[in-house]
Length: 446
Image 1 (spheres, helix red, strand yellow):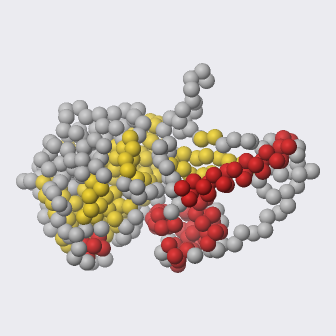
Image 2 (image 1 turned 90 degrees about the horizontal axis):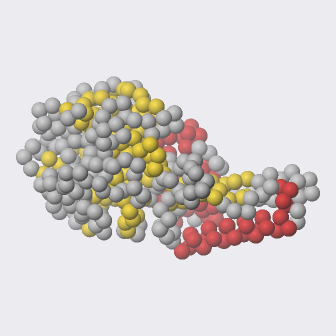
């Protein structure tokens, strides 16, 4: 049953609606919650039941009895009225990823049974139905010269950022990607833009009251929080400002215990976690925790080492901390996992994970499904050209990604949405990486 995997009643309700084919917006309307909240629940559900797609989640709901499969209508062969259908399956884009053997067997069985059924129909005159006998990966872009071997091109240039922007804060709200403040033409910026990935257009919003750079952002509820940063005088500040995307307004939140810039930031279970950073004199190993219900900052267990420009990503109830620097020049390869509950219980909340293939700091990082992606960053050299990498938390393994179309240096922002990771910067660059692609297989209605 679903409860064996720790699904709450709300998560079970969402899973039932997913199984009916409802979209995130339809689920949100049915349960009177925001689409963003639905996305958060779906990530948790997929993690708990060990699936990577809505299709697998539907099969799980059927298998565990959360929903009942309706009796299928008989197949009309003589009239040739049956039409081929396709079903979208979401799979990891990295060909080297090995799914758990139980899932591989399940998918192998599903595909084998489907193909045998199609073959039988062809032998019985199914050619008249026009059913395909293969499944084909959908490439990110239209193949070029037909004489060239066709591969999966996962990178695509998207609409440029209206202004050159580095070290900006970034967050996803609904289906829009937000870039906030940052460094533009070597000066702190206050400008706020959102990118609509569907329409491929940029929209300007109310500027941030305080221009800052070398910052991060995180979404709590329906507000985007932007702590600290370097001001126009190149000094880190304690001020925390939050943006309301629905009303296009800014307001202040409780100030931090100490000034910080070049920190790492992540949201988890309704709280903000701010790791390390620069206080104006040195990089720190502190952990600040913000509770919006109390509008108050507290201090958690210190990091094992001082760190600035690290990247933090939350996944499966913990926060991963990638790379960083202790002196602004030397990159760190270390990866830490932080467990908030252990911190609350007075235990050591830190665990060491497999190191990044290439040491780096000031990278763009984001999660998509159960995968975490790092793009760009600095290795301490004048012109770094670090490849994008992908981390699988459940297996604690790394893999190197295809080269981007344009080099990605330090201070880029990365955001995951649907099947893609969008990488913003350096400068005006906006590149899209297809992290997940769609495979179609024939589905026979009997």
